[in-house]
Length: 439
Image (cartoon, rainbow, N blue to C red):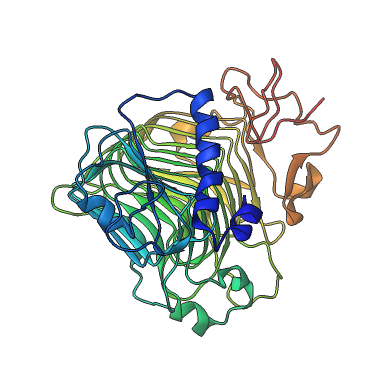
């Protein structure tokens, strides 16, 4: 597709012809509602278009002002620089999809307010010049719902892939965050965030954060604060220390009516199959942070934490406070700086937690109240300070069990998830830890 685009850059009709042919083929395979329509936007088109292939709109605002968009429609954007995108008071009855036709659909930020039923796919977003205001590049307000983002490329700048070579001042000049989505029923999927401050924050109910990569960050990787939040199959790595923030891979907390932490309750938080790696670059880098893997508090109901890989040096590998009903199973934790008798741990903080099952985990340490600590051996948990004794090469990001390990086929099957971190199905005799050994 990229090659076709380059060949037809000077010939809009040729380019759109390719796109239309692809859409027509897909339509034959996947029929859609007769009411749905496809429209086109091209920044290089003259003003006054009608959204057709021959006369595309010259920008998103022209499309929104047209009055013709309705639920089920698709709006395809040609490559170009779209500046700041604003979707305010857009409320179709069903979802409208705004989709990049290919690489090169770039915006400096995207803001959604008082809107619903919008999906965005394939956008590239970074500021026109370095910013240090710690604002988020993509935002959706509390009064917006059912807003979805997939295949986004978010960066603090076009050269963000070079983050391992940045100095402290470079990072401070680029203090810009990724997604901040405050309404209910939102999702971020299959997206990449590079060289940013805070990664993805979702605060409303029914949020999904799946299959995203966050490479190079100076704040927290993912925050999920609402009920029924799913954080699954994300990869978070390479944390740098530039200020006083207590850096976390994945975090949540509750707020009471008075605004104080710990006063509310979060229900049905699921953290499944994520990988958190404090640092994967040169060991002598001056900005490596002491990353906390996961920290959740203070009142949690029906918490699920399974199949995660956590390689960090701070105490809290997986830690939660005030848990009522929960499963922490088949996670693999290692200290990414070598053997340690101090960190990280799987911990239940403070008193008052009950009905929490902790099973089939590998970790250097446990920090549990008396009412939970007695179940560790019965539930096949393994305290492993020298992780290289059982794992292939944990200091080089290979967390699989060694052939012949005593942890193979040794887990409690009744607590093991059906699949492992990689999606491999566990058999009748599952392995301890996040990764199942292949036959």
